[in-house]
Amino acid sequence: MTVPRGPGPDTGPDPLADGTGPAAGQDTERLLADLGGSWLWLLGSAVAALVPGILALAWPDATLHVLAVIIGLYLLVTGAFRFVSSFAREQGDRHLGLLAAALYVLAGVLCLRHPLQTIAALSLIVGAVWVVTGMLTAWTALAAKGLPHRGFVLVAGLLGVIAGIVVLATPSQSAVVLTRLVGLWLLLLGLTELGLALAWRSALHRAGFTRPG
Figure 1 (cartoon, one colour):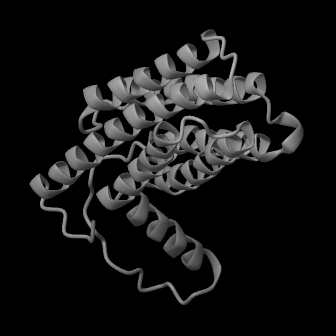
Figure 2: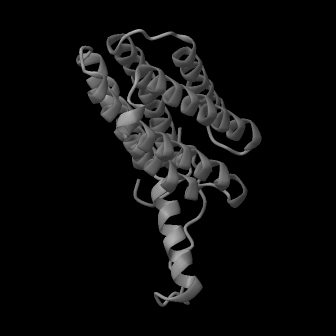
Figure 3: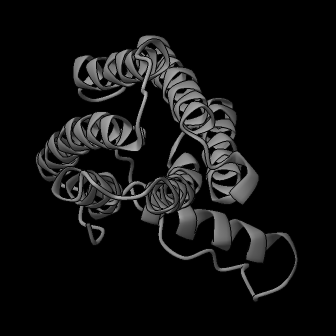
């Protein structure tokens, strides 16, 4: 779950930025922050969860290899979204977002590795990632006093924790059971992120934020 910070004023381009040195790095960071703080970026993150969830539910008889590819790609794409979104946070909170992004990418790579494409391994990887990242999201919601829609973000984090616990605690004896279970939770998580994206869009409009997205 991506959690941007509250909207701030747009300070405009840095007159000292000439494409080199620290100014160039600041411009890149500002660009990532603008992109990660966009409600459209949150919408893209929601779609990244909804699409594999729908595919899993619509294709319950998918082989274990296909399921591993779907989950692996979902984790990699979500990791990329979380990486960019972490730059929209305050400096002190950014490390949690980067940690979550790294966990998603690492888990995605593990899911795509053929020796680890077993029911037990996939359940362990997905469940552990959802539990850890859900806890990080919940902590962000509790610690960030000025975060818009803190309650919504907290619910999203708790939902991720519950999803991870369910996947870890439910003994999946077949790829069909695991596919349906993961598909259902991906759909729920995607709908939650969709709601957060729309809430963030509303918050940006109320704040008179004029940057695209």
